Length: 351
Image (tube, rainbow, N blue to C red; front, side, top):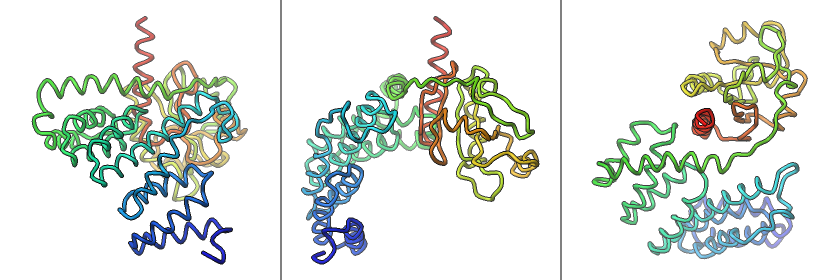
């Protein structure tokens, strides 16, 4: 550290990782402080290190201080971390999610420190932002460990209504909750959670115009269609990164087929965009892969530009009007986003 640590950030990372591998709590605290000093301008790095430091008594206070520093107010308009073409409201939503993550880690650190009241208060605040099923599960587990079945029931009800959640998990959650997991009270929580899911997911949505009639894509057969023709007024999941030429594919074709079958219940579609140009024989490639989901080819890079797709895999969701509502979604978020937009479309139709 004396020789190279102060000028080489990666050296500090290696030091902390080795300390963690050795489970040397004092070394973790020492290298954690060095990492903190080296990464004062890196939000992601501080979030990761803060979470690691709160796990151990010797470094917990340093970790809590690092995480709390991430809660400072941000001038959204002049924020240097706001990406090119990212609007101020979009950046605000991103910051809200980052703060929720930091609050969750702070709450978990306080819980490990025996400060149950402060921990639960912090976790409640973390749970108010966004729709993140993994966070709800973690907070439910933390609440149960502190003997708080009321907060745990509310969190598990949120998890239960997410389309990704299996019936087996719901049964397990009800068993863990005891009396709070049965009867009218539980049913009321589920009803309220469905409303909460729609409200929170829509609060993270944007409205990015998409001229779908100008985005030309090639079918496996070689014919050309516009995105508007392929979507045909349906909520559509767009996945960038299908590979029909190699064994591996950034986008799992079998998983996309399951997704397509699932969202079809909401009259929605899934469209996969290949990461390579169209070539003769693509129909045969699809047949060999047993892929019945739609795979198209962006030879002109028009879809890539329209969705600002900079890598693979990338998942986006377009509503029935042809407007991009969700960009860079996680795979586990897609079903809930589709269900929310389908409900939004249904309400608009009834009006």
